[in-house]
Image 1: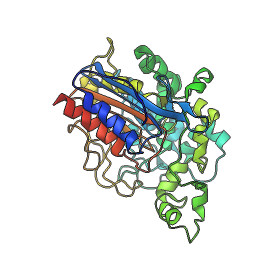
Image 2 (image 1 turned 180 degrees about the vertical axis):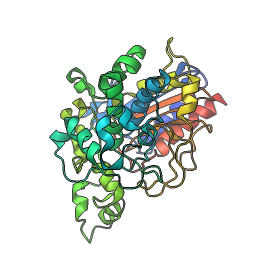
Image 3 (image 1 turned 30 degrees about the horizontal axis):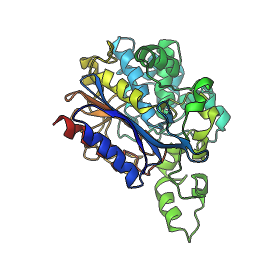
Length: 396
């Protein structure tokens, strides 16, 4: 039986039980969960194995790459700039990024970038991993890219491009990269172990991701799945390289066709503000708590900005995410029929494989969950749902 480390506050024993159950039923390899209530930490748990290959146990200071949970961190940066009057989300993107005007994009407002309505979920042509890690080649390509649908008429998940699109607007306004802004203005003041662009000094703390694919399978192999492999055929139908989701997941230009790149120190060190945030559960929970409460004397977003951020900007099925009911505000996923966590004002972001940062302003609850064993869910799975529901049961 896997040992569970950490602690829970009085009355939150159900959270520890749910965390232990995830290991007992074989759902986890290594994981951590943390929660805040009314600005105070009430759960901080970890356990399992951080690196299966090396047999390294999950430590109190283990970090994990959290894929699209990163988008919520980038959204915090954009919303903080809006709160300070430096960013008008209804202004055209070209107000801040003049080169973006190509292919008729001069009227696209910043809010379309944050809510996945810009029609720029991928980049035509090919791009090397080295080009993608260099930032400017991607933003230049996106400035030149023609939208795949008329902006504002529908929404489709910008799985990777969201980060460069929003991140470039942040960079133009703040005069620093989104990763630097996150450290200087948000994570640093709260003492959160959270980075978009990991310093080399912290690389030794990062756990190793465990593939969501069956042994020997990768996104690259889904180009031509074997006819006698029904699992590969099924996965290819959803995320193969010729599907909308497949193109969005491997953007820009197929650079992410090998998911194993996300275990690379070079990818960890780059700034990919939609997909390579590296953090731990307690830091995620603390940052979301500081969006809905005061934590250690700090608050990231005012109540008024939170209200603006969680106003639903989209409706109907998501064009990229297989018509799922996943709706967006200003960069955050919102409460919906698919993501029915907490109260109606709950918001946050999930990452591929299962990680999540989430908050409920009405209950003043906030959560962070990270893990290395990846699940196929795009919007969480039973592991995080059970943990979050246990928190609600604990305050009831």
